Image (cartoon, rainbow, N blue to C red):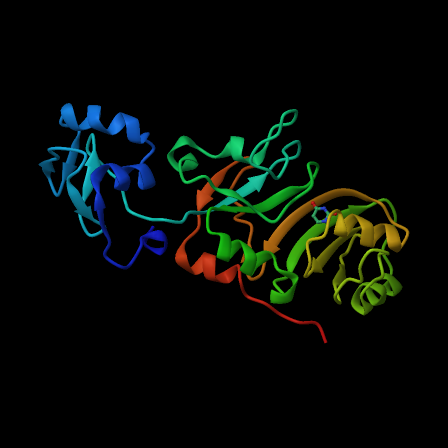
Length: 247
Ligand code: URA
């Protein structure tokens, strides 16, 4: 996807190039070169020390290895997975990343609870992570929540006013009522631990089901089944950092 292809031309050794943007470990590259499996602009590579540039077309067994430093993935997170890269006890969202992207070492951008479903971004771009998750950037996250009791217009006002949750006060948040009073849409700017659930407890309601449906201006792709992952386009990546304020 052209969004993630690095635009500046950079030169480096062939084995470094492939360690960044192929699933092959660096130690396996000499063997691939010997077998003639690697081509640079259609010509078999001679040694792992060959200099290549990000403009070159590098293929391994005929499969192009596009150069990019960063990866941006959208996951429809299922329940039962921790938003982490590893855990001794529970499965983690990185377990769901297909092999073709694993070597980029993507990590969750923000966090969803183990029992929360929906939109989770994974990336290895730390600056981007900060731009999406920092409360100061005012990137709102939108959730669909099912409650154990109907929400009321007073609850809408309480969300809008911002809430004192003891350890911090939330920014103004949106509670949108739907045709079913116990099913609501919620938008928050921060991503504190259990924030949506805690805000709902504060208005006397318990969340029985939670799904993140959007971050910034980016909606969860409804064609992604639970547990499925795909890369973001450039335009989608930009939509993730769209901010707003509630007056
Ligand atoms: N708020 C919560 O309470 N849980 C989540 O997973 C996300 C936001």
